[in-house]
Amino acid sequence: MESSYTFNIGGVIMMINAAPTRCFDPDVRYDACTEAAELALQGLISEAEAQGWQPAEMAMAIADAVEDYILSLAQRHVSRH
Image 1 (cartoon, helix red, strand yellow):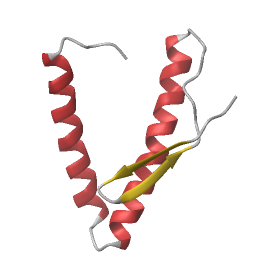
Image 2 (cartoon, helix red, strand yellow):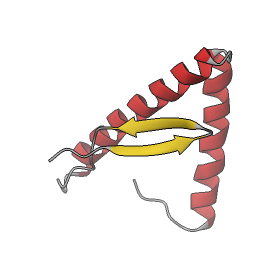
Image 3 (cartoon, rainbow, N blue to C red):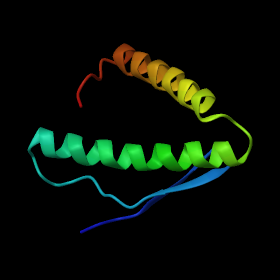
């Protein structure tokens, strides 16, 4: 069963049409998660580009934000994927 997730990123409404798989195979879950993340990022970058940001600028900003988030997870001792 497929679900939609709608969320707001900096005033940009994003929707992911992919629910986490109920499969217990970590490789399958990882692939599904990667696909959902890539779709969300493509939408975010497209919207940012429409507002005047260069794709490379937005990609670097996203990379910095992801790095900060990973460090935050590490501080909470959450290290699974």
